[in-house]
Amino acid sequence: MLEIGAVQFYHDPLVVGTADIQELSKTHEIVSRSKTELWHRILTHYLPLYFPEAERFHRSSRTDWFLAFLERYPSPHMITAMSQDAFIADVWEVVGRKVSKEHLLSDIYATAVGPVGLPVHPDSDAVRMFRLVLAEGRSLIRQRDEIEARAVELLSDLPDYRLLTTIPGIGPINAMTILAEAGDLRRFHHHRQFLKFCGMDLATVQSGKFRGQSRISKYGNARLRRTLWMAGQTAVLKRTNSFRDKFERYISKDRHNAHLRRKAYTAIAAKMARTVHAVVKHGVPYRPFFEGVSPGGRTSL
Image (cartoon, rainbow, N blue to C red):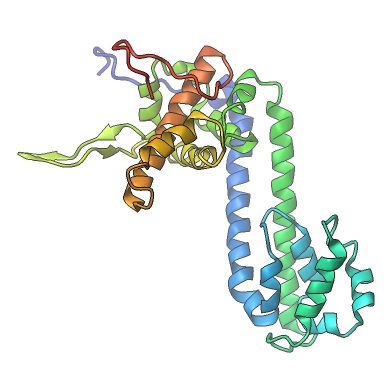
């Protein structure tokens, strides 16, 4: 293997300077997974028991105001114990800045009238445990925001980071994950090497005369592959870029075919990997509809 050059080089994170980026990225993933698990616990256990009517006001797990509101009023009986004007005045600062905030709070008060949740006492252990979980959720949100702010502060002056964030679908966290898992992308001399590192190269199962269908190998870096997949899904939602253009052409035969759409997302993830490698290797920001030309004269997609 040494004679034919079938070797891999180990890049020490401390030597190449990616140790801090790796720790930020991995800790962010741990915090995000813990927050997601806790959100599911709140939405599937605590809210159905104590305040099921409040679920329709939940919009995003990235916001803190909903948890802060539930921490103040874990049961609708605590809301209806006061008048509507008193409730709005008491909760006004808790929900933060909102469009039509008074209308929102009036709607919450009207929803709290005639609840179907358990009539637990405000000082009961059940409510105390609910508030304990809500406090943990708010703590995880603060930790996540702190890590994201530090990541931007650490990477904002890095040329590779600035190049990656020009690509649709790649924001600060996706860029940080790519740099943490792949390191210096210039060490991959060809984009096929990077695809194989990600586990997005094609592999075919063979046994005797049997030859299976070619699929992506998935033998590479799982975190990197997942990041590129999510970045591709975000990119196709934007209006003007080559990712969406390719996705639309891929599914044009049958837009409602789930298998075809899955194959299209896989192709977009592979294109995202090639684009990431090309942007960093050549040091040129992403161009929305620029495609290289292959030696045969056909447009490379």
